Amino acid sequence: MPETGERSAGGTAAVSNGRASSRAPLAAGVTVVVLALGLLAWAKYLPYSVKVPHVLDTHSLGASILTGDGAVGQGASLAAGWHFAVAYLSSVWQALVAGLVLAAAVQALLPATWLQRALGRSGGTRGGIRGALWSVLTLMCSCCAAPVAVGLRRLRANLPATVGFWLGNPALNPVVIVFVLGAFRSVLFPLDAAVPGVAVLAVSLAIAGLLLPVPTGGEVAVVAAGLAAGMPVPAAAVLLVTLPMLSLPSVLMVRSVVPRRVLERTAGAALGVGLLAAAVAPVLA
Image (tube, rainbow, N blue to C red; front, side, top):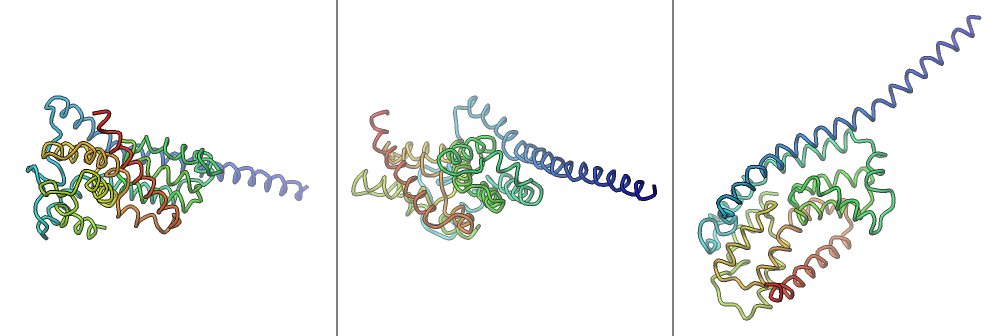
């Protein structure tokens, strides 16, 4: 009899432990979801709920992050680099903090099975589409989405879904590197300089657009300032596509989890889409 009682007690303990272990992933997953909603509301949803009505009322996008209050950016200098770095970080610091905290929470708390269920176990086009669809909920800039993409990959999310999420964030919606690009922005974006032709300008701006980081939505103000300064429509179309899609800092952040050949093909595809936009824009304008 005592042996039977011991078995019964052991069975009860096992059932209790099983229930506790099943509740732990659920609690962790709910914590990540609630944390994500709170961070995104703080960094994205609430700020845009103020910005969008202001733009609709004033019909103004505000100053461009590249040119400031003027039509043309400052000359190449350390001061220009510093002003750009400050302007960029002041625009994205909330989203960057949200991205870093969310990335840490995903890696530490989110059950891997949940992630595989959400993004799919297999890669291919379907995985990329799933990742892009999930990115619609976050709409972070490329630099802010990169830490989350790294966290997803470390939890063994499939590669197409990870890349889809990373690119979808800036497309659908490292301070030293930002400083260097800002210092030479007038060279990368020669709005006041004579150029050999629109085609050459479009290619150079396409490459620059892939390197330069701007906050989500900032590309619209950049393009508006460029058009006001006399930038050709094809060149403006290139920037509208390539500026938000990729940036050098974000590429450097994800290179540890995304193969080099995938990054090269992704950059090539983004460049191609930008140049296609340049070819089509005059017809649609």
